[in-house]
Amino acid sequence: MNNPSETDIAWAAGLFEGEGNIGVENKNLVNSKRRFEPRLQMPITDLDVLQKFQAVWGVGKVSGPFTQKKSPGAKPYWRWGTYSWDEFVAIGGAMRPWFGQRRGARYDFILAQMPEHFRKPTSFVPCDYAPTPSVAGYLKHRRKGERACAVCMESSRLYYAEYLPKWRAARALRQANLQK
Image (cartoon, rainbow, N blue to C red):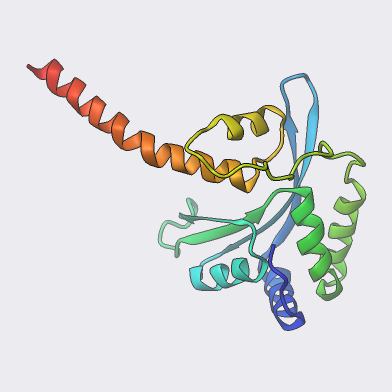
């Protein structure tokens, strides 16, 4: 996460106050357990403004464009979102002084619901090896129910960058052999 200036935080908080939303999602897990995930989201039609908002924080995901089903002629929109307790606390806490009464109360309510142990103590600790083309580290993190560290994500990207072209070439060769 970036270390934004007070001016950037105030700008981001004003934009979020007008366009963003604070919510939660209850996820059903395999063992009949439920996981309560916080959400900071902001749908907006101006991609450049959304990218600037993301650049202020350095985290979150921009997805889209989406179309509005009820209004087919409306402008497409993009959505920025973050769905982890760490980012919820860091970003929401930084913007909290600039929130209005209603949004501030919503943030405080969801923050009060944060579980005491929402993740394993070792999660978010990067693995101590250099990125190599492999998905093993990524899968190890996901089996533990945590987000993969940056090293394992880069290893996964390297693996797929190397593996996918070979797979596509082999698939094309198989298809060519089937057509003969």
